[in-house]
Amino acid sequence: MNQYDEIQNRETQNRVTKSRNKAMKKFTILVAGQMISSIGSGLTDFGLAIYVLALTGSVTATAIVSICAFLPSILLAPVGGVLADHYDRRVMMILGELFSGLGLVICLVSIMSANPSLAVICVGVGVSSLFKALMEPAFKATITDLLSEEDYARAGGMVQIANNAKLLISPAIAGLLLQITTVSTLIIIDILTFFTTVITIAAVKKGMVKKHREAVGLSFLREMKEGIAAIRGKSGIVAMIVIMTITVFCLGFVQILSKPLILAFAGETELGILTTVSAFGMMAGSMVISCRQKAKSYVRMLSLGLFGCGIFFALMGVKENLFLIAAFGFMMFAFMPAVQIGAEVLIRKNLANEVQGRAFGLISFITQMGYIFAYVLSGTLADYVFEPFMRGNSLLAINIGKVIGAGAGRGIALLILMAGMVLAIVGIIVSGLKSVKTLDRRISTNETIAESCPEGL
Image (tube, rainbow, N blue to C red; front, top):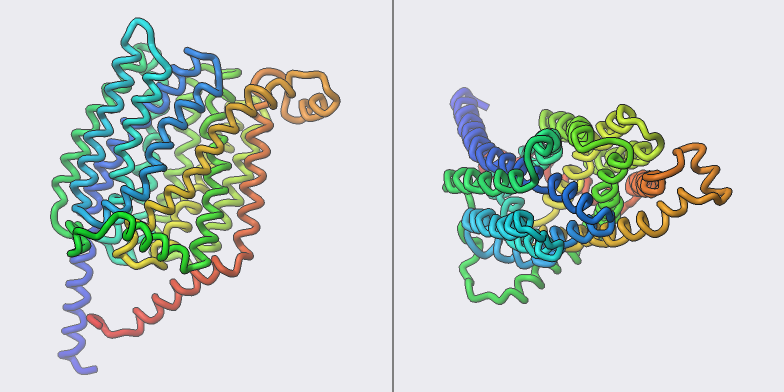
């Protein structure tokens, strides 16, 4: 290679680097807006859970509100995915944010009334969830619009930090605010954060796909079939969907049961601080992954993440000790980004960009049904099976109580322990699945080919 070619190559590399940095700056703006929205959502989630639990005294009622908050978004995720591939993704995200706020207004009106209604609160969170279904597939597909494959893992870590700000920051703030104000204030703050998010989305104009398809008359049914075909044709992705559905099912138990578990022997402020401290593990894990350019094996990342997450998840139910629960919770969340990012990269790099909106919509629909099943079962099992069992005098309950304690909240602890062990077992199984390993090999093959090709080919 002569000197002229070397200069040309350096100039080309510099242009590529500048382009990547510019795209990453735009993406960072989007992530910042998403983080603000996430903090607001976390305030509402925490406040509503405490409010409903105090209003009804039932874990089942809290689970019902959670179902209403998730189910509409899950059911409409495939439709949101089609819209994300068909229309301006930026517009879809803005509309999703604005109209989601309407649902919170419904909740606010009910809570501030003389006779708060659980049914009206359920309607409000359902409406909010309905419009979030428009935004989430569009936001996920935007990663592919703006960034190169080399930045996918880094972007995934940034998104995890933003999305999980509701766990990192919101609980401690909400717990402290609830000592001086009411849940209504938390919801009002959440509504105000939507406007900041809309501004950041509108600020990022270039580089985001406005319309993927010229055939605007193409029916939703046909596009949905294309999304299904993109998934069904790859056994590795089908296996990943099954794995993530089981994972989500197990994690759904800790989402519903962690608050009543802590409130059985501590207060709201302690719960908020403990939740925030534990969730800093998520930030730590996300930062570690974001700082790494490329993982050697995303299957290994996923398997290790599932195993570690499951073990520390289970340990949270062993003792009524805030310090131990905080430590185990921190470690559980530290492993969680490896699960989320490992799975997403394995799927993203094995799907064409033009079908990713629909594919992620369908995948989200299938996997997040695990949450719904978990919410239905967790409340029922906690209130009517495990709590009565651990308060009883049977020989088995007494023996188990010698390990994890007996009385109020220990049935919930036993349920958490069992769900965590299932998750750890799934992590072990994943490491040996050939179909999933094939996805990893395809990524390595594609990267090798890309590295061996001259720039611009």
